[in-house]
Length: 122
Picture 1: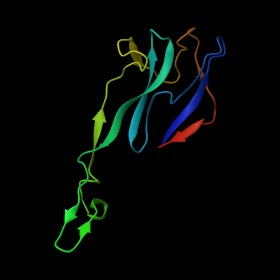
Picture 2: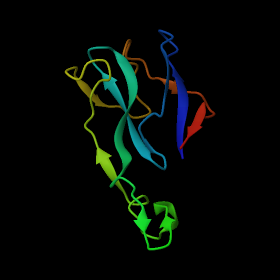
Picture 3: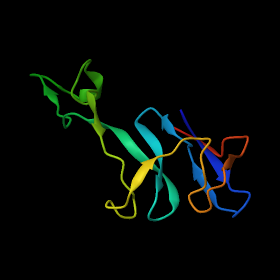
């Protein structure tokens, strides 16, 4: 289960809701990045679970069985789709991974996380 925290800069009052580094849930993984052009922090997807094959039905002479009921059916087979780190505003911007404790993208002061998670996500 992934967690999102509120990070705040005490000097310039920049405030952002991010994971604070690499984090993952059941169906996705995220990484916090700093965009040098936007001067912002973002959480971007690094891996997303995708369904490998479209579901079909198994036909027998008497009945149709939905794919969810079959063990090892194509509906349950999934794969991971990986993606590169890029700015969500413009993919050509200069980005790099950011990890807590890290500096504010606007003033360079260290950002401090709130003690409790803002959101738990899956």
